[in-house]
Image 1 (spheres, rainbow, N blue to C red):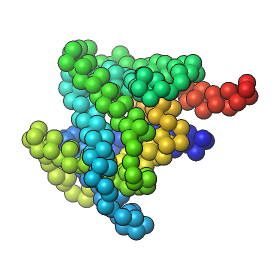
Image 2: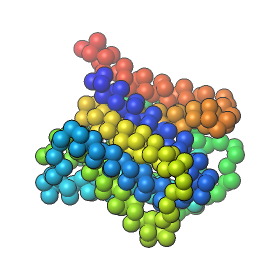
Image 3: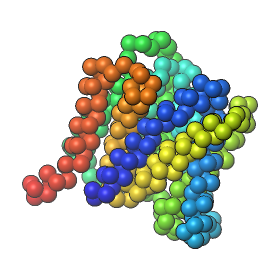
Image 4: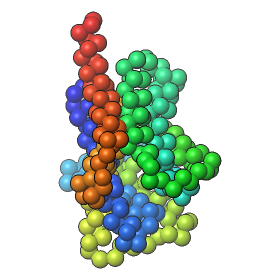
Length: 293
């Protein structure tokens, strides 16, 4: 089980590094549609090379391809709607609403997959959400409010929850996490490319510096984050893996402070403490239950 916790933390921390690579690219004129398409495409290419080196077969059953295509659609659509919500709402509110996805994961797992409801899980989930709210909601917002934006942000959270639950619930003949992640990234690159073309926002990187940043974005936040997410869900389940995802905003805040010289306030410290407390509660709860038994 401890391996699952480690994989979950690695996944959320690598996801949290997305601003480290996307903010410079956006400042240089690349739009989100192109960044998403390149991220998925580079991730799929790297995963394909790893499969070729390991001599694992690329061909999978048609039913598996359909299921992975559906999961990848949820993942890509969650990313697209997440960025679209920024057009209507302040970024802090979008991040807080989007991180409500562990709530939907827990509800889906309890209502449809008959997972046992645990007080420690609910306590950790709400601690994590409170921590994310403290990190994301700040006084520097523009005060933008839109029912459409709120709906889109919540829809993004639901799509993300379906993706996380689906990795655990969907029955696949292919058992290799490498192959699963390859097809998730491959389908994601096709979906995001179609979105960029539809949005008339497809642009190519300019120069080796942008290609290098995109390569790091694809490898760290695409390959590493999704491989470890699949491994975590297989070991500890969707519910615990989703709560551990709270380390993503902590990592993003750390990048902002250390790299982009953003201020670290008392609110940031309190939010980080709540999230770390939630992660510790999730990790220690099984041990405490065994001791009580």
